[in-house]
Amino acid sequence: MKALGAGPLPVFERNAVAFRNQWWVLLSGVAEPILYLLGMGLGLGGLVGDVKLEAHLVSYPVFVAAGLMASSAMNGAIFESTFNFFFKMKETHTIDAMLYTPLRMRDVLLGEVGWSVARGGVYSAMFLVIALAFGTIESWWAALSLPSAILIAIVFSSMGTFFTTYVRTWADFDLMQLAILPMFMCSTTFFPLSVYPGWAHPIVQATPLYNGVALIRDLHTGLVGWHDVGHVLYLVLMGVLFAWLTIRRMSNLFFA
Image (cartoon, rainbow, N blue to C red):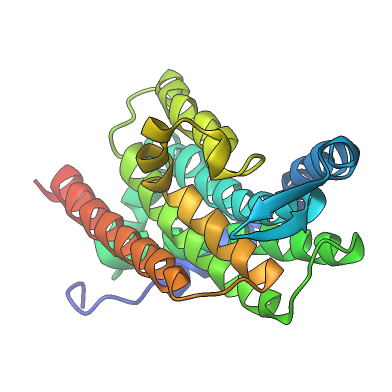
């Protein structure tokens, strides 16, 4: 019976039931990007004017809104797959308890990743509604921005879970902030790639958030091209790679 597994759905359902009395957390998760949109996009946008993007001019609020939607997906997935996952793994030992059931390690991890992806997806969906209300969407291609945000959430959920398997204490999460905050600020969320020095371009373009931001920005502005296929492939490969690495890492930790 143990070898057959039970699938990731019971893990997802368990998290949903535990979260039902904490729905207000969703509001706090979407409040930050909205404040950035108001302050940076609509406020500073009056001083910045239009931004040149692939030989086209787009308004600064439109430029920023796309970056903030991608960041919303990242933040929701990262928070759930790091702090909350660590709490269940090291504090309450919920992960250990799950493995005493017919659930396999793969089931547990896919369920946890699925839940953190759902949280990132909800953050993105809520922000997309706000972006529409503020008129920062310029193309019907934006209908595909929510699936793209879910793909971004998959990547960061897999990466966050993998990182958390190496965390020893809560203080170790400070190291994560050293990566997340610069990525948030420097992945063309607020400024186009052209303003960065030439040597920094490959570094910025190698980050998963940059590829997510570039993809959603093209969808929001209608500047969709074959290069967006590259962004999608990059995100898919990163998600699969870190999901595989996490399953191997967790199997070694619990069954070695």
